[in-house]
Length: 147
Image: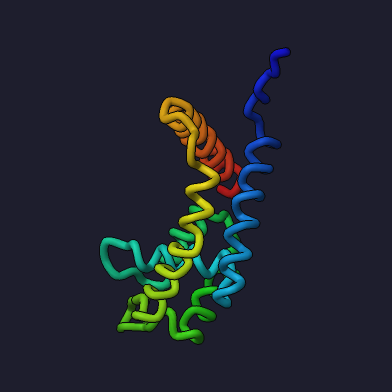
């Protein structure tokens, strides 16, 4: 008996995304942060140079396609929690913010290893190419619809 692998489509992509995000959100909840807060904090921590609030809003919007006002509120929450700090015109991650992201990474590492482990490299490469193309096309459609 042979089984046919499912063909990748929007539904399957969504199911995979929400399955992985569900795991991440459980870990984030243990640390008292939301998914959007984690994305915004990561953007500040991984930036090559300090970012202004507007630059962080733009970066997070590029990732999540979330409402700008909601993202701005998320930055305010991170400031109130002491995970970001204002330094002139820029928002910088605090030591507590960096430690939080490191703790989340440590908590998710074993799960990530179990989820992704054992998938052949050539399958991961093919999936990576397809997902990058889908993201590129979807981002272009989003830009056209919001212009």
